[in-house]
Length: 328
Image 1 (cartoon, helix red, strand yellow):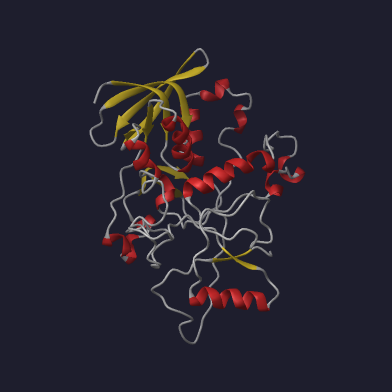
Image 2: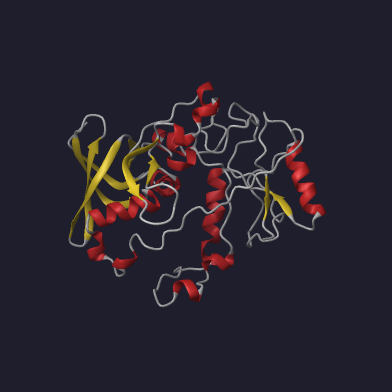
């Protein structure tokens, strides 16, 4: 591997943002280099094991842990470092933000200037493209809170499991409005067709039926000429004349140092990794709002509710993360 690699575009991170940003550049014939801190997640029967959930794998690691200074239930957090990023282990649910999500709340935003620079109408066409790229399965109009959309989902929703039907029926009996969750899962006939197994959310798909980026777009883009550099850590972004000129990288296995030079860079290392690298590279010097870098972090908020039944409410060996309720 040469000490210096030249490209038209350098993408840092292989998750949703990085991969979908790389797609049009590769399709336009540009020389694209994608840098990923982690390696490939092997697929096979081992992914069905109960202990194969993401946090138990070496891909969720504390190599560079994040300190939890307040809140939370542990002093440190790890991160997923693997080709495809969190898309490999996430539960495939793919919801759009609502129109109201792009409208600033005065009690939160105040005079910080942290409001979205665009509204839902401007980003809706890009949601269309993302849903097409991820081949989302869903039922348009079933969610009463769904924002405006231009057409149906790429795939129809899969039939509901018995337990999902029972949950949906019980919700309707209470006057609620359950709907099939939009899922980035391949239900089309073929070798990658979903087997409806119960190991989906937090698991890498054993048969690559989940439309994660390591199963779909990254291999396609590599066949079209994109160079993927796995197990490489970007330690610094070099600048000149108020623009990024190169990325300094270190091989996690050998310690070898290289640089990637490019005409354009896309920093897509995640909500924590991107500001960390931006601040470590002193890019805040060029930002019109330097204090906003790394601020206003939004995490995945959820509460887990358990219920006890005198007998099993349904089969345990089938996929059942299918129903959403947005009445609250």
